Length: 369
Image (cartoon, rainbow, N blue to C red; front, side, top):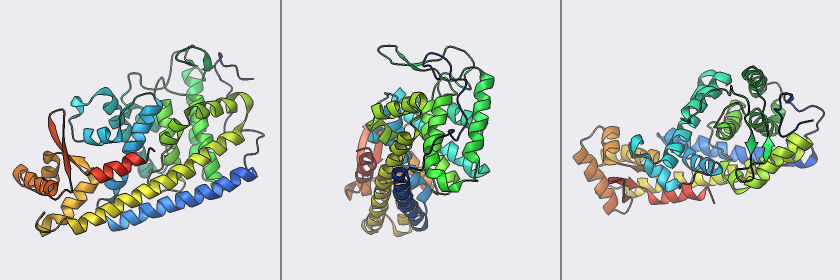
């Protein structure tokens, strides 16, 4: 029996023993989740076909995820601030925005590692954690780690203890993560791998963030998504108390069925919202193709400028100058023309002039509502 104040060094390997997860309700949710993911992946594929900058446009969706993930950790910022921060030097960013910036880098690294190797292993989890730029990095080595209430100090859970124990559990975890033998249960297994990673809690810090990053990577690994664009941090933040309650109900009551249901419901909700938002961004890019006329931007530059706008959304003059290989004066003239045409707006952030597309920032911000 698991006790909250004692290390859970007997955490069972996946799949959970003697538990039936294919309930009628969960199978119905799996069908809905599969359809929602199919729509999202179809929208992603359409974006790839239609836009030269598709990968960067799609990566923008890691920004609202980073903001929501930080909110789960009680670090609050906004999507607009996080997007505009990308146009600032890293050293000028306040801590909350450094957090979101490093989180988006961690997502990109995880995607690259998976694309390069078609699997993820313990060293990859360590690399992702390092990218988060946290004070304490690497596998936990010291005893005494507890997960407790910040106010009452009540211990909710004590994860496994001992570097050897933790590494052995991560090896079992990575074997399960990379196993292709039971493709029919992938959507259920998303919930299982997230719980297991949080239960192992291998790092001194960043476990929740990495656990949330691994879910979309798992869906990419097993062919449900082309790119890890489906994120659950916003869903978890909006249902935070239920999230922690259901995690503990698995640990102490073996209630896997409700946990799987919770994650499947989140996948359906977030996949539908993201698909709609990606479609809106793509339509806005198409609209700009009509609005960016020759009296705004020279015809031979229009395609490159629009590609730049929608792969960045918020940027400074230097960024456009570098991207187009033009002088700062030329870049400035283009941007001022776009502002005059009411296709861009401006703001001063830390004394630096930032240009941005308000409609796209609004769309990305609304993925959190």
